[in-house]
Length: 409
Figure 1: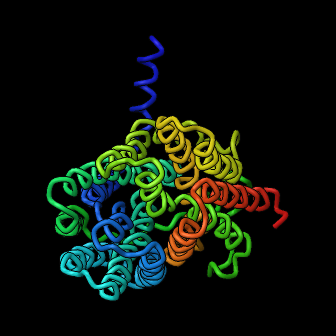
Figure 2: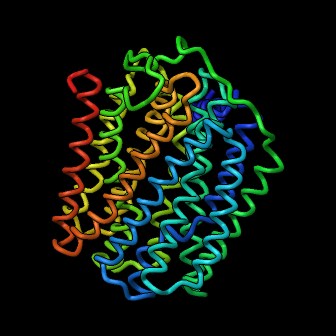
């Protein structure tokens, strides 16, 4: 068999073994993310169309993070009380309604409040979605199930920004809110039709040991799990740097490199396409705990993310942007699936929702702090200095992951 045919066979083998519900969940996620156009272009919309200053955009993105923080907490809490099905449907339906309403907002304070409630509603979806993955998958393929749903997210994300850039060029920013809201409503309907309520499946803790030799947490509540909290600090730092690709980097591409919105959309689509073709086989190959500890993989991911920022300061060739995006995408592919798996495995029996809520809170805090910090840096320093600062933040996250792996933190 030729190398090419073996590669194709290996690629499709990485998709084998999932339940029908995991595939339906991935389909719903794909529909929702294919219409996700507002957030990738939010910073450009606020600056180019509404004329907001970078400082004001920073506060809007802080509102984004605050809503995400509250939504993640509420979503996790309600998931443990009511189950994942109802929370996912309500989250998507309410997100779509809020986007429709926000399409009429132009006032700074209304947008600030609207963004808060939109992200509260939308990010309440994440903890129940993770719990649904745990319920519909087996421990042996859970990391790949997470990766499959992430694949759907990123395939949708490769479609959304490219289509969004085309819509902006032809019809303006306002239509983005309507398209995004419509896909939220369609995704809610698909969950309602395709995924019937199912009691969460709890697996025996002895089968959920982490790759670094760390057993699932014995505590019943995550705030007593010290090493889990330190792990979340590293994840927060990594995410705060990675999320610059949704706020600072689009403005950086336009101002520093003079790219059009359409070109920015195509560059951001590189992320989703790379994930579509390479993430599943990569995770399939690396999800062997006897060869690679998960915290070693997270360490490598953090260095790759820093490298993606760093190289942008050493060339005037436009192709360096694609290389930087590729490094950041590889970092994302390595970090987020395995970080998800760590969080699921440490979830105490019956408290998976709260463990995933804490996990999502780390992301929400990264939104809360990262976007504002990045925008403020961009307003105070030149872009090469900003790229150096993002590199330093990525390296610090690597140090934290190393400390957790070596049990020195």
